[in-house]
Amino acid sequence: MDYLPCVEVETQRPADAAVIWLHGLGADGHDFEPIVPELRLPDSAAIRFIFPHAPSISVTINNGMVMPAWYDILDMSIEKKVDEEQLLASSAKITALIDREIERGVDSSRIVIAGFSQGGAVGYQAALTYPRPLAGLLAMSTYFATSESISITAENMTLPIEIFHGTMDPVVPEPLGKVAHEYFKQNNFDVNYKTYPMQHGVCAEEIMDISNWLKKILL
Image (cartoon, rainbow, N blue to C red):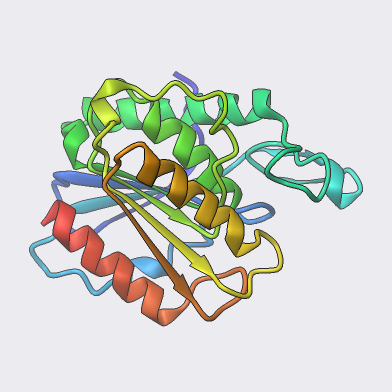
């Protein structure tokens, strides 16, 4: 199997849980690597953090510049103008990483999918279409790009979902986070929505909330 290259950080060996964390446009797997010690997880945590690198492709909204991206964005109305075929291909690559964690001995119910911005859009697709129950989905400063086409598996209709967004986000406007939250509320998901007074990024309070959520579902 041709897996995406990844950065891996383990809190304890052997790992009995995994978090697959997808970066945003123009970044790479190292972007969120420093967050692991900031989560201040207890010594008992045995979690493998996996930070895959997106492939480098031409991105239309950036004048065709080649950069790490999970899919092409065709214009600034990002929730409508994405290359869905590329997004689905990236989702399949994440599915392969989930499968690999199961092969490495981690139960699917101990695997979390996390994604920031573009990575969050792929995370929605990968987690909600996976054929076994997962532990949770973390969607940060992102949008549900495939909400009109996705076929959610029965195994993940009860998936715990955390949606975090900055109230001053100029890249992915906060109303897009609200739209996703409303979708999951209407479909009776276990979903939580929280905002922070920040732009398109991650803040200390959010990191603490992520830590508390991971402890709740994995420890």
